[in-house]
Image (cartoon, rainbow, N blue to C red):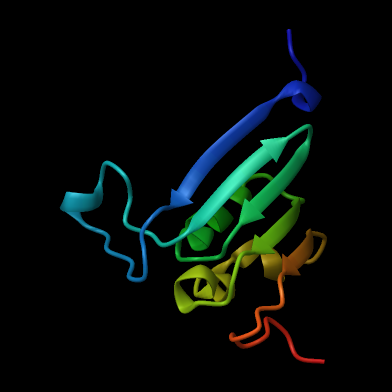
Length: 112
């Protein structure tokens, strides 16, 4: 029997390109923009914050408190637009480490 430290799971919460496109034609693969969740050795890693991040957040609300590492690959709109709707980020007691690379030709993810 394996424990949580031995588990490795990947779930795609959003796989679309620049524009979210929910509907009957996208049911099989989903219509949300980029968001991938990996659970590795008891750690939750989230890659990108497209519209799929909102749906992931709804799921995580059933698992409080939440601790995760959130990686933004770059600051294009389709990779960040879900963050304002990611409810767990605004719930006291949850903890998120947020990471993002500094791109030479893109706006920063935060201001100093």
